[in-house]
Length: 215
Image (cartoon, rainbow, N blue to C red; front, side, top):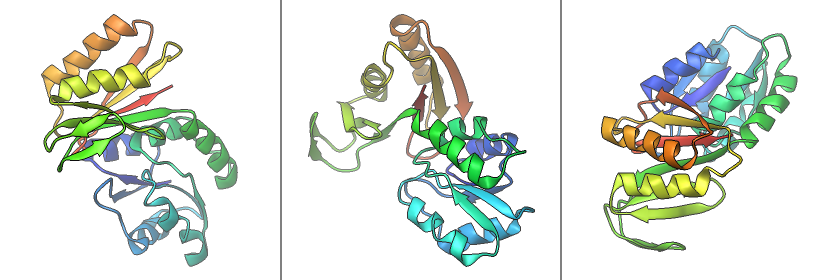
């Protein structure tokens, strides 16, 4: 497996879950076709599963199969939490095609969200955003929360993202995560979604203090 990773912690975690080739990338740094191809060629396997982990990298990854003699299957993951869900169901005894289908289903079953800080003022469906505000973003829904503080945006995002039927919440802490904000996440979940199982990983990704996956 080859995966695009946006933080040292995520790269280490991917390695623990069976990824042999990691390419640096993420929301603001898209690796080139050449970089992905080099990673595919470097792994010791004739069948390679690729996790792009960003919607912008998916079409780049889909070019790889035609550029190598290896079989390349792309699992169209759009975020790091989707990748983690996909990796859990990876079967080293199965071929790339079978793994691709299972992993894509697992990734699709995860609702994902993230928080980041606005670099400019704009208008959104949930109201105006000022430069420096924090935004909660959900895959498929766009910006669902805006707040002047990180903790406020996280709480509003969790309210939107973690429904009453949720069983597992995965929290990926970024480079700018803080102990106080992480504690606030645990407190919110304990108060409002007491039945969920919480998994926390240190991802180290820039610009996004917290990524969330909900199953």
